[in-house]
Length: 259
Image 1 (cartoon, rainbow, N blue to C red):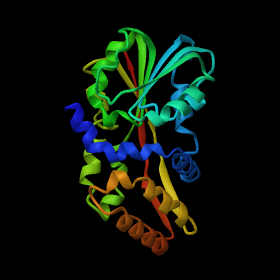
Image 2: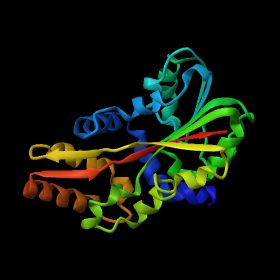
Image 3: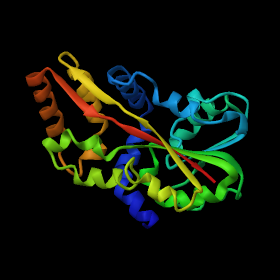
Image 4: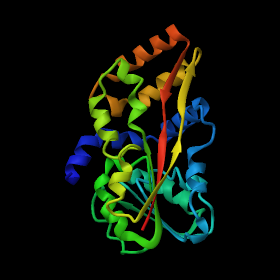
């Protein structure tokens, strides 16, 4: 898949990540309405053998979402993201976790310019479906004995919405690297691939209309190629009023790939 194909197909989605305040508000909604009350970041964090980690590379790092829960005392954290607006918040958060930090604007998949066999840990959390072609580069920069940790959605996350709408384009994005096919892709470049499942659902009840509407609005860039987001929002609010409860699949999977 060409670099331009990935970027041009998802430019709107990428741009939606510029609004840090909206992300924070939606993050609160997700935590409050998740059936699984354990923060997914803590599950990822606890799966990493930090005593062996000094140098970290975070791909699709955003504003430092995972850095907020990283342990302190690291030597280096490098963040790569396609949005320059994320540099300041990322460095502010990462600076509390490592002695040295850096941020690079790169539209993955592309050469990172980083040295080979350099990082103890490489991360790609809710991002690898945008640039699955970067896996070979990830394997190159990871040290022998190092760990690549990626977090992704299950393709079944769309099952409730598919009862009402055809999310064909959104499914194509998720299926680039999903819980169901991720192991096959990673096994081409890594000696070991393990996984941890994170079963979850978002549950909205009567009285949660404002939160549900904001959550759907947050996803507008993901769904507007398939359906007018306003139509989706109105339909889901109508269903919530009719049924009194709506539940959305949010099962995720963490992959742990060793070099």
